[in-house]
Length: 248
Ligand code: MF3
Ligand code: CO
Image (cartoon, rainbow, N blue to C red; front, top):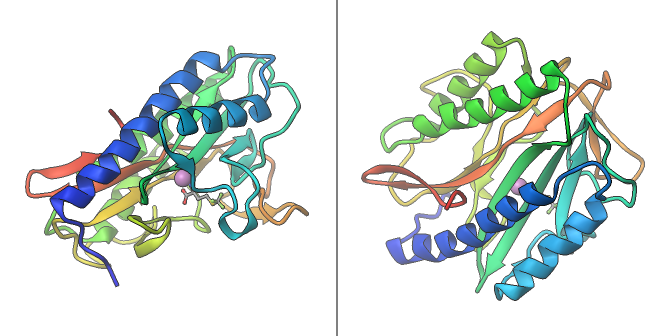
């Protein structure tokens, strides 16, 4: 069941999203060779608390941290670690902010120091694919229109789209309906309506889209060990089009 949010609900989620956007902006200034994802995780958790918010991921189905930190070939759900980031790495930081019971979810990939041309292009195309999807997130379209726009763009640029993890409705629960795949045919899936709030969070890979899960039960990696990147926003559908709740 897809829950429709009121304007007041969306405003509450936007407040959570503004905090999340500010945390990502601050993380961006910290990312450099030498910092650890454990330090970034603790920084993000501290900031959430300063803003009167809580890290919704911590304890969610036993997930142990405030953030996911997914390095290089890790697609998503990587654990923050005490190893230092190195020049040339790419790392995705993903988190869900809970402000007074309302949630916002956003992931961002960061370049550490000077990255390869291939990594740089993967980051750019992945971010652009998110915005191609957002453009289609308008009342009257179907979810498949969002999915298809992302896949068509990503594959035209020579990258693959992860199948095993998808966007999702969000509100007072982290994962609600609808499901939002980042691949598939247009003009299929639920009709997009005013008051829906969902994430769009494409994960693009340099090689195969297939993945494997580490022994820790969480960390999802590309099967071929090649790079993966992700950008995610929480989007609200209004009469005037999509509003990005996790941007500003
Ligand atoms: N933020 C993730 C998403 O985009 C969910 C993280 S799973 C958790 O859906 F276990 F870490 F919370
Ligand atoms: Co997320």
